[in-house]
Length: 90
Image 1 (cartoon, rainbow, N blue to C red):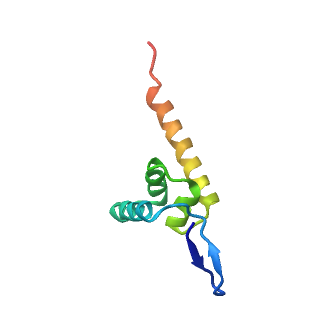
Image 2 (image 1 turned 90 degrees about the horizontal axis):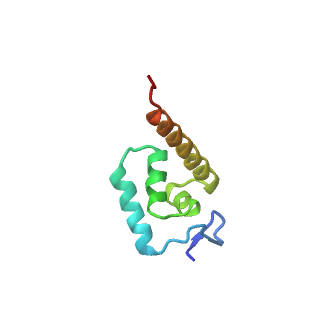
């Protein structure tokens, strides 16, 4: 597991479990997405198979925030599907 240096100079374990290649590919994906919002970036990284902790480490936030963002995205996507499948009977 990768280590990073904290403010006080002590080594701390990173929450990310990505190897170098995975981290590089994820950074490239984020770069390509440019100014896309946090939700779209988090969804793209999740669809790439990354965990909340890995996504959070890449995006500079906490796994709890990523969990909330992904939950809201799933709820929003589910409500759109329901609206799209409703048909008028007549």
